[in-house]
Image (cartoon, rainbow, N blue to C red; front, side, top):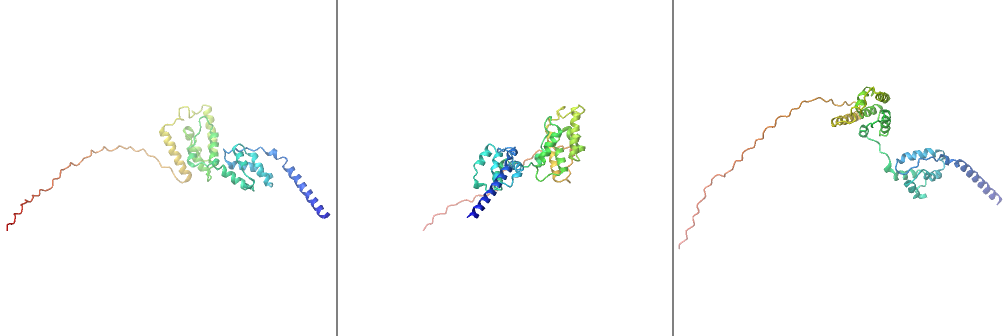
Length: 271
């Protein structure tokens, strides 16, 4: 009996020590609670990565990780988490699946080549800022776009003096950005007239058509680097004079004459 009581006390003391150590390790978790709270309107995959990186040192305490997830939520997302039961998320692996299923509609879709080629530089936007913004969107494309393909697509989105002046610097993205920054400085110092000086920003329909055709050629070149855009040659087209249409005269058709056979009544039979 004394041996059993002694073993029970030793087990109790061991559990108390483990509990004290656990509380000591988790005492400062509040200091790491600078979560970007999720409200259900942004990409849920980004929030999961952010939460896991913050709670990485506590990953051995699965129950603690699950319960602390609510501290990273707010608004409708927090209301949704409160509706979950313990049996709904027995492990951490179940919680991300339910979370992504709930907010999959907010996940960002990767941009297409057409969307990348139709982006435009905003008025009074610095060239470096536009290049950074465009390349950030291009990084989301699946599969990844090579360096030379990105340069071709990005250059096709430029207009006016940016397109013409940077044509010779389209060998790499770094050279393109450096040349664009220098061009911005020249425009600012008045050495070169900007695109808004002569109304280059307001492109007519013909210019818009040419830009779309140029973007289309850039997409094809990005997909097939060996493709060369077709050359355009001026063609003088003179339509042939329309010949007057002739119509056949209608001829009335008369059936051939057929003589009618005379009818003679049969004479009565006399007996």
